[in-house]
Length: 187
Ligand code: SF4
Image (cartoon, rainbow, N blue to C red):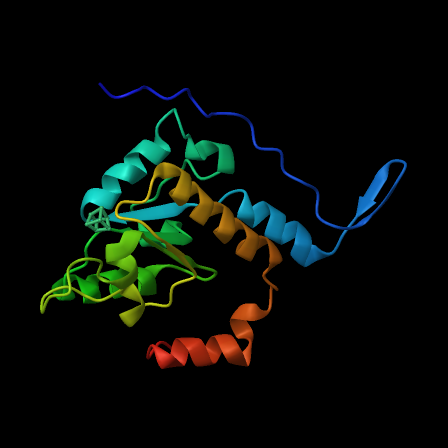
């Protein structure tokens, strides 16, 4: 019989960004304050097509409780989401749909490939399966596993939070970012 694990839920302590402080004041730069706010209020769009999606359901439930990271507000509208989470096998026919959802999201936006299938096609090295969603959209974080455990999905979320926190407000206008988008044929 399976063992029921103890709930993990505990509050996450958010650290203040680097800055100057003294009695009654704290000063930091605008991009650090914006990064802190963004990183702790990520709205994910779950694009779940198969088994990895079930692990995501566990990640949202009380034991793992993604709300502790400020990400309990899922969005099924791309225009009100800033993190695309692709979880499951993506058939080549679905590739254009993943891309369209990504294009409908406003900047700044981030992408996690959850599990072996979304990251690389997984065990499905076949004519019909996309060998990784990075063939159609840029990916920020890859979560390994088949399926990944909820802890691994949470680890992916915290890696995205680190990226978000430390991203310059101007990154999206940088030549490197423009070149990345251009390599995907995105203006
Ligand atoms: S990585 Fe494994 S668990 Fe996840 S969708 Fe693929 S086959 Fe299913």
